[in-house]
Length: 191
Length: 137
Image (cartoon, rainbow over all chains, first blue to last red; front, side, top):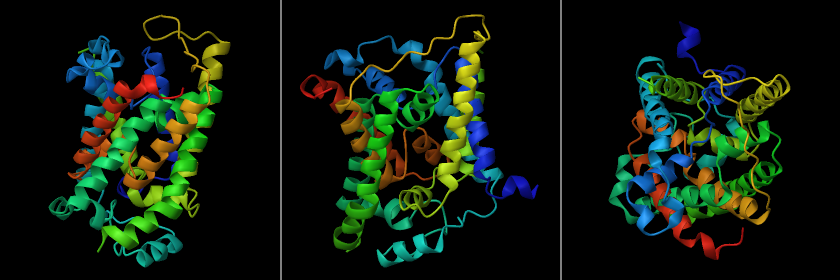
């Protein structure tokens, strides 16, 4: 039982994720999560504003069912398969975050200062979350895929465009983690 | 219940994302600081096994469960859209610690504020849809 309740190592996670991808392929589909955002736009009537959203979204229902399952899976794992929510981070990471004012590094999955419900009482909190999401949505559609579509499906099929996209993911991620986020955290967000 | 299999795959995905802490903001932050092998192990082993499956499917002409040909649609050529779009996504991924799959898993984990990230990502997708003709691809 301990094996279930403890965090699962990468060499369990990677093979299982690759199985999810394999089964989607064998069901005649592809592994790509960000397409769902486009489908949601289409269902909400965005086709009136752009042809990009004019497609038969009913053909994409299977993928919406995958994310519905992902929500349920998250609920099950959180409530029935995990006793201790803390994360064993590298102590260097913890020290670095402390110096930026994130004092609860590793005590749960998300920093409370950024994701606790109290952030909804400040405009900075709303801006942080909505703007962060907008970067994800705009960027994935511009690049034509996210971590699942490019880094996993695309690289597995040796697609050069996916390699370029993954390099982009890292350029953006490194710039944010090393320069922008420290500036945001120390100057503005946690005042 | 033709969708049941997709629901099951989604549940497996949600469980593994949670149990391997892939949905954790801290894990993404640690990854971009190169202070842990964990995330690289997850993505790397997934891709290596994925490569193997794709090669086997192509080499032995494996069919889908319903007997259809498996098509791997090649990505359209280009550099700018992948690079610029990738950078923008990378900024969003690292600041929120979430990708378009994990954000839904986080919702299941009871991180309610991630709902605003999901709303934002739908708005971002919509903005791309109406602006895309003016963007370099």
